[in-house]
Length: 182
Image (cartoon, rainbow, N blue to C red; front, side):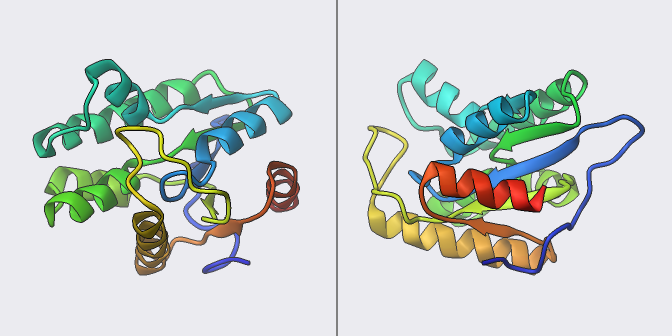
């Protein structure tokens, strides 16, 4: 199942790896999928900086910290792109920071919106909320929020005209679906 189709905004440049965005709501297996894809394709993945922030700070971010989170994610992605071979798997993008900013504070800092609009990916994957929802403390809220954020991710991508592919099922099924796209 897919949104606008396969392809979309290609992050290109001579010798640059194809960037693959792995987006989705909380507890949908983004990190597991990104890590498994990187291992499978013998390349790098960029972990979600927000997870590191929450673990280091022992709390969820404040509204004014969202800009730093989005830009740190982008900076780490750009640094990894210089070392990756052929593909770079990105566990989230600044678009997710924008969506969560709107969800929690009802607004998005214009710098985050601009960053989210200008980041380009060769392929955008959306992890389906079809795995068991598991609370993990500070970052995960509820199954209802997970479903709402999933709908918002899809709507945001469609609104931006970004092609996306919904990946579903077990990790093995998801890997096979991504391999068919790549």
